[in-house]
Image 1 (spheres, rainbow over the protein chains, first blue to last red):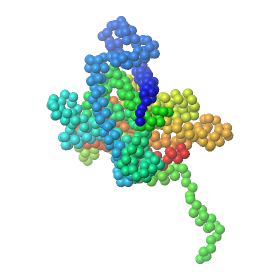
Image 2 (cartoon, each protein chain N blue to C red; image 1 turned 90 degrees about the horizontal axis):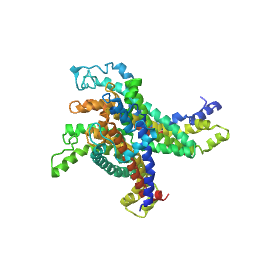
Image 3 (tube, chains in turn purple, brown; image 1 turned 180 degrees about the vertical axis):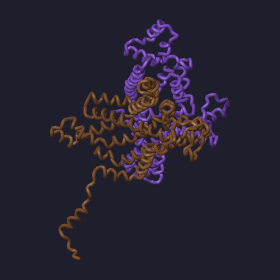
Image 4 (cartoon, rainbow over the protein chains, first blue to last red; image 1 turned 120 degrees about the vertical axis):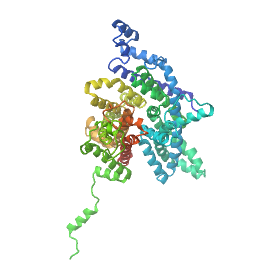
Length: 322
Length: 312
């Protein structure tokens, strides 16, 4: 049950090359891009040629690629992400303002998805090919075939326009106070969270079901039953924990897709997170913000993968020993 | 009438009693048919594909005929699916958009399969450093934040490509290459896993003993046996690529406004949800139906091709 510090440290050390690799991919894309992505200042005809040349030297635009890469990486790791052309504030301030909202929406949707997927998947696996299993199977197929942007629009159509229960624009300047403040926040968070949660729950239910189905047939589960343990204990203590092991791996593979979904959802409901920041920055040609947000997304993906690795070792202690 | 059997008739009866030899394709089809929903998905998809291909010849209303007299009209006899805010016929636009969405899905799938198979095959045949390096690359790509990177690449390269090959082709090529370029990793992993087990099998050893070159071993013996899971993954990839393209268009960063892909129509419709819900419903339902059908077909193929039997 206990997790050794050396294992965690080893995973962290393995995660670092991936971060370097991703930063290399990002920088290559930027370096290959035609023209100067930061060229607005330099190629502006109102700026005299010698000033532009000085700027080029100051920003080191004519240095060898390797030098530029390490300088860029060093600046990124230092939190020195430049200045937003559009918002006129430092990029790191801008992102730190927006990040908590994204983490809140993504985090709560994942928890909700897990709360749906675990019981449904395990219950379906203990009664394979029953009516419940078939209905659950059909619903999961529908769930992950519905693109998030369409689910979002449907929810708006039903709950905001037809029923008028929930607001469809996320507001960060709610004026009500006290208890009402939290209630209003909760109401406007429901739909974005639901959209993400339903999509994730659909894919996870399938993983949980097939993983649990593999475990239910094993001898030690039969042994547990024949010892006279209650069905509840057999399922919770013997089946679920071992069924979770392959699920964690598959969930880790889904992490990039989760953040992709967050971008779409934030855009539909106008949630002021880093996803909608990315879209507005692209529409405004705000390169420093675009690069920084992409970098933050990469870091988030890597940290969640790291978390999954550690969770994996906690569920299956053999991994940490191997 | 004499009932004695001549030797000839006995042969005929014996022949009839023996199970008819069936080809591999027939066998797969027989097992595929058992999956009712996969069969239904195949029919729905065929209807959509055929409709999208021949539809524009039957429904000849131009996709960009602006008619302010018919703005935001709900479905009627003249406009079966209604009109948008410029009075353009939605049915015509959906038929045209379907061609693009499905073409993007197929082309991106093709790229993903080709790249994935090549990477997986090289990794599976070589031991040591090359294998490790390729798998590290695969894992790296798997942990890239795909949608942000997709958006970044499109943002940086959009204008240049437009200048070189024109707006429509440029965006098409870029969207297809970028989506395909981010979807080859699962295929590479599958192919490598298949190769690792197949290359040790007796029939490959026999081919090797007979002096078959490495290329021949791969092309004639290993690859055909590794294709089952690849076909399944490829099917699902078409659905994923259609969703990816629609997502880009929905964010307003895919095809230009004059090319009505399904995602782009949803993007335009989302501000009129209260007065013209059908405008968003029809393309959205089409994306959903197409993706659902493809996913069910993939599921049916998985049962029919049974990767586990191939891996053995």
